[in-house]
Image (tube, rainbow, N blue to C red; front, side, top):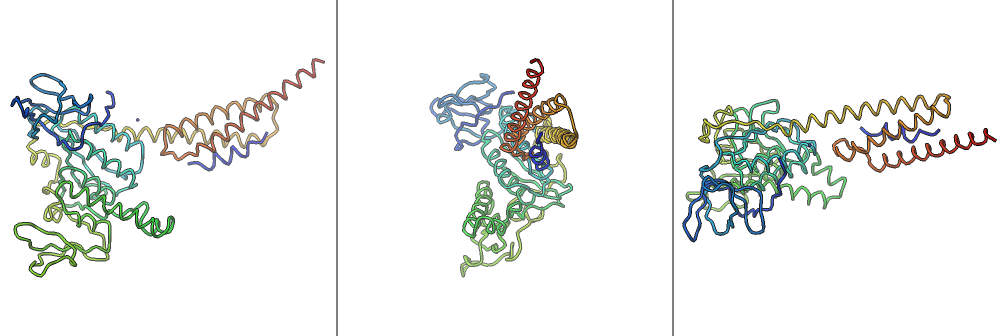
Length: 407
């Protein structure tokens, strides 16, 4: 019996109805709907469900109905919404696809519940950029839901790296006084490593795309795009200058002679990181708030029911259980590898191969369900095929010996 290949494979590997987001991104969250032709007024909130050109809207007056929103003027005023706030926490590294998927599904479901807003409590050092981009896309795509980021005091003391991007995706930002936001370089695949892995041109294009993404998220909510880019690029210097009644944040090279320098916000050589006071000062954050209750009070939601959504945490626990199952299977296979070195009878070998076949099938199911386990599906399938081939060969050999003994 040759199970050495299987052994090397094992030793090598270390989460209501979900509704589709088909509504137009051009529509803003709304609570009062006025028919532009008849003047009819409805109060409620739109959902993510659509049917052709019509959107399902939950109204106080008529219940849930379908409206062609192109015919209605919409104003966000919380009238018709449920007096509750849903809270989701992002208080660890953004590293797992299962948690990201849980967030993507949850934000659709939350939007369809019609809360006053979704409060994202953030305290993260960052994580994988592509996962953060998916979370940002889910936030900006939830056009029937106001999102507020609260950068709270915790172990990480802020929203850093990819966490800064998630905060910038929200409609509003509040920060605890001892927190920071920024340093949003591509930590998990920084410019130098990308250039080394993919070449200078490709690395710079990826880095440039990330800078543009941060700027776009900032400008979407009337925040300075150049300040956001300075969180990514050490070579960007940003100054504030007078410009009539407007506050202007520009690179020094773009300063005009009649503009007066007010403040230097970012100097070359370091990534921009803003304290809570600085974030408020430059318009990135609404205000300093040192508790969830203060955020709710500032948003006129002190009387709202607070509902804690734990979908991301539940997904993280599910992944930990899967890792535990993976560890148990790995130990079992390792034990079989040792036993296979001993002399055994054909029935014993067949039993071991049957168990190995079952365990490899379990591993393949884990690989399909949990990409975060980073199991090599091809290697596992090849190993399963090898085990099955060995089992059939040995089974055939045993059957042949039995026939020979009869004659």
